[in-house]
Image (cartoon, rainbow, N blue to C red; front, side):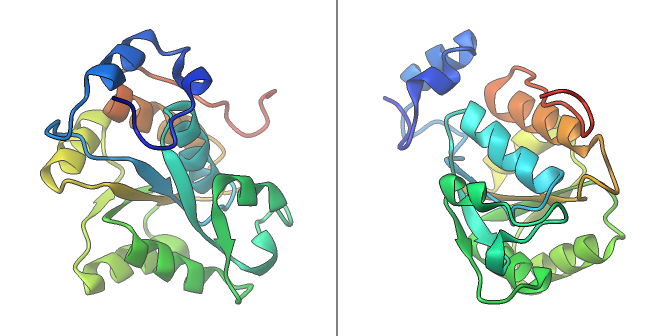
Length: 188
């Protein structure tokens, strides 16, 4: 049995994960099937990219014009992100927290985005994890039976290595294998 939206070629590079996916059943404890984000550089984009590597569905809300600190990122449409009517970041942040079963934040949670994300999750009574280890993330995903995870965190310009942390943490938590995306400024 495979997850909806699974692209076999995307996970064929992860041998133990393909075996695990084929033996998964509805009763398995890890319910995660989708990662969403706001599409900003850094943590948001790393969450979407690692989800694709793991064969998970992707989506979320982005500001009008698919605005990021690097300019419009129209490629986010290919990851299922929808364009919000506002060009500002807060409206899409709030929608992504609302639409997820839980939110994980990576990086400085005292930043304006961190404060908004965590405050919104608390006010909505939504589970929120801040800078978890891979084991903490996996236990949290299982405990709260999270199917849709909002991945949020610092943008690349303020935290160039956040992509590495996000990709390693999520891949270890979900697949049991570390997949590391390069940091900003490293060759792709």
